[in-house]
Length: 276
Ligand SMILES: C[S@@+](CC[C@H](N)C(=O)[O-])C[C@H]1O[C@@H](n2cnc3c(N)ncnc32)[C@H](O)[C@@H]1O
Image (cartoon, rainbow, N blue to C red; front, side):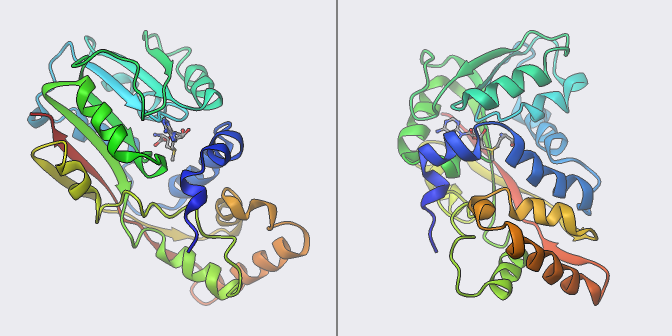
C-alpha cells in the first residue's frame, strides 16, 4: 500500500490542502451519517476543557494544522474568556479559511503560518498544544514532537487526535471490490504513521503520562453522492471521472440496495499527553 501521498509535502500543500474543499467533502459524510449525535469538534473540546486537564483560566493555547478552524468555530460559546488562542497551519489557503470562518466570532484569535516541524515560538510559551488529525501528515514526527514539547510549559498538555487502523475499513473494502487491481486509492486516507495503535509509543518518548480516549461512533450511509464526494477528495480524484465515475455510482447503488444503507466503522480518538 502506497502511503507516500500522506506525507508528500508538495501534494498536501498544492492539491490536498490548498484550500478546505477536500476536507469539507470528507467532513460532510461524517456530519450527515454519524451514529453519534455529538459532533467531533465538540467532543474534542470537551476533553480539552475537562477540569482534569487543569488548563488555567488564562491559558495560552496553540493549534497546529488547524485547517478551516472548525474546532474553534464550533465551540465559540465555550472558549474560556481568558484564553489566548493561536491557530496555525502550514497551508496559507487553509489558514485563510480559518481566518474567514472566525472573522465575525467577536474573539481575537491569532493566526500564524507554521510547519509543525519548526514552531516559531519561545520555549514554554503555551499551556496546551492541539494537533487534531494532522500528525500523520508530518514526515519528521520526532522533530515535530520535540518542538511541541519545547513550546509547552512544564505541567502543560498536548492533545493529539487521530484514527485507528479499522477507521473506515468498509470504504477500503468497497474500493478493493470495485477496482481490485488499482492502487490509486490508497496512500491518503491511511493514517498509518501516527495511529491510535502506535501513537502512544511515539508520544511516550516526549510526554508522561499519555492516555487515550476513543470516540464511540460509526457511519450509516444512505446516500450515494456524499460517499462519492468523499472518495473523490483524495488522490483518486483525477481517476474518478467520466465513465469510471458513473460505474462507481452504479456499484455503490448496488452495494446499498440490499439493506438501504452502507455501514462503515469509525475509530477515532484523542491522546492526552503531559509535559513533565
Ligand atoms: C486532516 S486536516 C485537519 C484539519 C483540522 N485540524 C481539523 O481537524 O479539521 C490536516 C491539516 O494539517 C495541516 N498540515 C499538514 N501537515 C502540516 C505540517 N507539517 N505543519 C502544519 N500543518 C500541517 C494541513 O494543511 C491540514 O489543514
